[in-house]
Image (cartoon, rainbow, N blue to C red; front, side, top):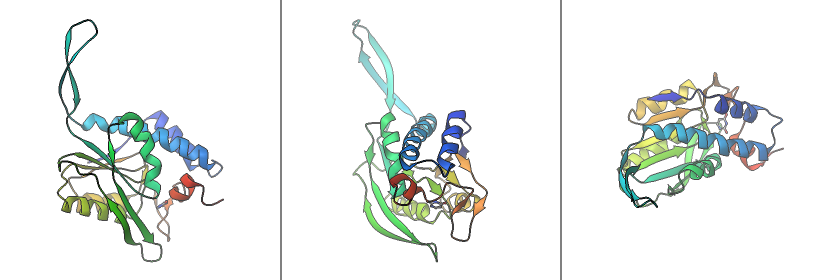
Length: 208
Ligand code: URA
């Protein structure tokens, strides 16, 4: 399943992030906020289990809580920029990390870090990476998590293109993809057009 959110706030914040005049602190702030909004929408697709609480009036209330552990897994480095916004809404979530970089000329992905919390295999795994370009890093990350036995994996990206979406849906049909926008295409360096540039550089202010 591929879901592209249609929400005025998400669209407005993404437009601000696309603007090349937006500074890295504004970019980061908007990424925080958009990540919260996206995970709020995404959580509609999760289940709850009963939770009975006693209220200060002395009554009991038959309520609910999320039925499984949540693990956020940013793909380093740009994915880190989405973690805080998600933790704002789900502070109980655990955080794993997958470090990968892409060799620009070949689009080959090199993994340099992999650390995932010890949780039940049916936990809700949320992989986050702002850009779904060729889909190679996200797909490799999903292969590793599937090999470890995780069965409940979702991918949240801000901006994706057909190529990346097709790769994930073909190779991982059980993984749902959530996007704020589907953009037109990739350029010759596998950057998304119109896109927002290098998400990692823009989050961390590593380039002028
Ligand atoms: N990664 C980025 O940071 N930007 C793109 O446009 C594509 C991949």
